[in-house]
Amino acid sequence: MMRRQQDTLEFIRNYITDYGKAPLVKEIAEGSGITSRGTTHRYILALVDAVGSLNRKGGCERGLSLVEQSFNCSPVTLPVERAMIQCVVVSQLCTY
Image 1 (tube, rainbow, N blue to C red):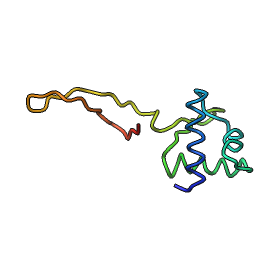
Image 2 (tube, rainbow, N blue to C red):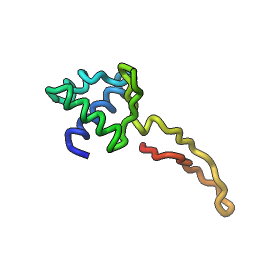
Image 3 (spheres, rainbow, N blue to C red):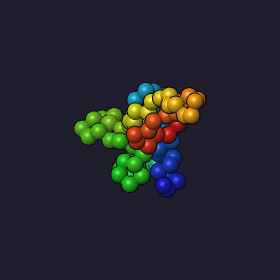
């Protein structure tokens, strides 16, 4: 992942954490110090398509979501030779 893409992803992650909703492309550009909305849009598309860090819901003004927020990861208890351990069952990639 390119440095600017990483910066863009961090901005989006922090924005969602702070405001509970995805930022607009304009807000991402301003918050990441990118002067071109077109460049910002290309970074977003790369994060969605190539990198897989974001999901994008078409037709929505704030349609971005973080991949790690999109998966359902739930802890379960499993028996292991007379002991019980708790672990997370992952059907998709999860990050914490």
